[in-house]
Image (tube, rainbow, N blue to C red):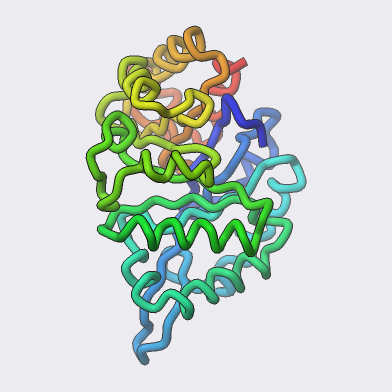
Length: 266
């Protein structure tokens, strides 16, 4: 995957990926969301993609479609956490839960080549770094991204994870950061992150369905003029991207966002 001008879909499995497979305008990466850890009804540790185990028959077509996307040059990334959490469970019994994650990544060797850490619960910097280092040790070619709220990139104030992301940046272990620019999708917000020490090529402008699509496209154009090699854009999430804005022809057309954004990035 290119290290600049990325186009990224978050994908929660609410619909199929036929539109991506058939499109001439591919995203650079699909971030399969979301992995969680916990205990089942008989207190056995589990790893889930949303509410089911990765091997659940309901995901058979999912893995087939992701494989087709992969064969067409799309990186497949596994997102861990998000609003549903999972990190407290992971770090509470790390060796057990990490072994489940390692098994999944081993089973999907050649398919999953990226990990995205969306930490929205209080954890420690040391635990977070251990997870990243263990992934890089076991899977040296794995791309690592993180998805903090924009405030955590604009300032050094601890974010939802309870740590300063600048301390992560200094390690050079993370390939890029997808800022959740949900409240201020603007050139000014992007530049605050740059001024705070984040290289433009490591900052991805994360948008969310419901933002005004036209306004976001203008912002992308503005950023690209100033920072032609900036990190790229993402959308949460695929099945209703984009949603919002005056032109309702865009609404609920899962692949149109990627097609139009790709043209704006060229």
